[in-house]
Image (cartoon, rainbow, N blue to C red; front, side):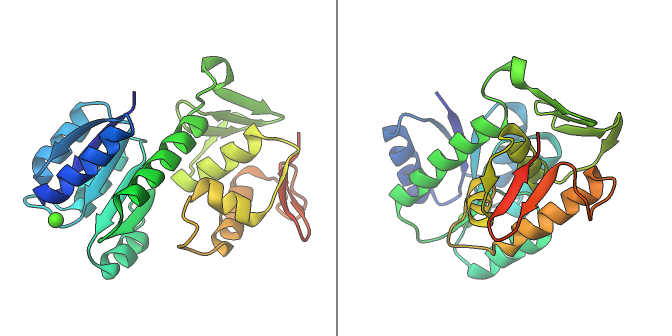
Amino acid sequence: MSRILIVEDEVAIADIERDYLELSEYEVVTENNGQKGLERALAEDFDLVILDIMLPDVDGFEICRRLREKKEMPILMVSAKKDDIDKIRGLGLGADDYITKPFSPSELVARVKAHLARYERLAGGAGPKNSVIEIRGLKIDKTARRVFINGVEKQFTTKEFDLLTFLASNPNHVYSKEELFKEIWNMESMGDIATVTVHIKKIREKVEEDTSNPQYIETIWGVGYRFKL
Ligand code: CA
């Protein structure tokens, strides 16, 4: 059973979120204070965190930033203000999704389900046997989330890593930018699929010897991208 932490100071909202998630068979823990929420998220294992932004003691921005230094689980940020959503994106805090209040509880549950499913796939839910991908000089350690090219480690952002790992885990399959955006960003209504192009470019700069003649991620003109096996 997946464990979810809700950090939300409005008790009525936290209760509704918890009730709906429990109906969907999740184990839910709530904290109504930012400092306590942060301590708990760091001390215990959760599969997903739902994080309000305006919180007593420590706000959601700071909690997200601190969690990302140590933890990989999906973080869904919740805010009453559209401005906050822009701020989260601008700060690059590593949140996986953003929901504006008021939202319907069923929408929240749907997003939680989608993120947990995606995280399980990306985290190598197939077991330790498949936790390392090695293709020519490229080595991806899915569990440790590290990437090496000819033995030299390269630094990847969360989304770059997710995108590369997804493509390398499904070689020879052509994905459209829309499909990749949906798979990795999981926000159909927000954002821009040009993000995919930008991330592919950044990945190529790290893994390819000659970015004009890519050996790993091929561009299939008019369709999308394919990882060459
Ligand atoms: Ca609040």
